[in-house]
Image (tube, rainbow, N blue to C red; front, side):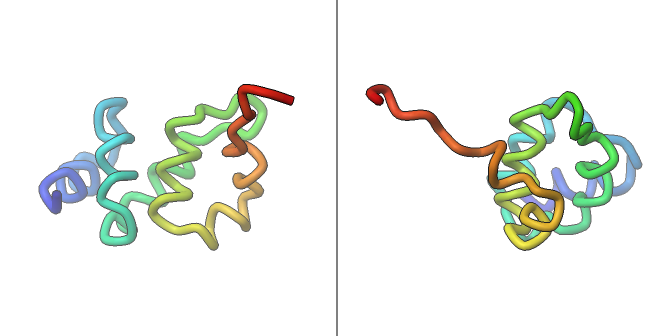
Length: 77
């Protein structure tokens, strides 16, 4: 797990395959938050990036206004 964080931190770039892994790692992946935030566009939000940020640091996700993006709609209304 630490390998994914180290690879992303060293590369200085966020790779599409790493986003899900970083979210699964959770808080230990905090080093990757600046790259995730840099890749996050509030006008065209990528759900996988928003979810990874939320799983790594829920407080940072709240500061960015992400919880509203992560609401899952129920099957029935």
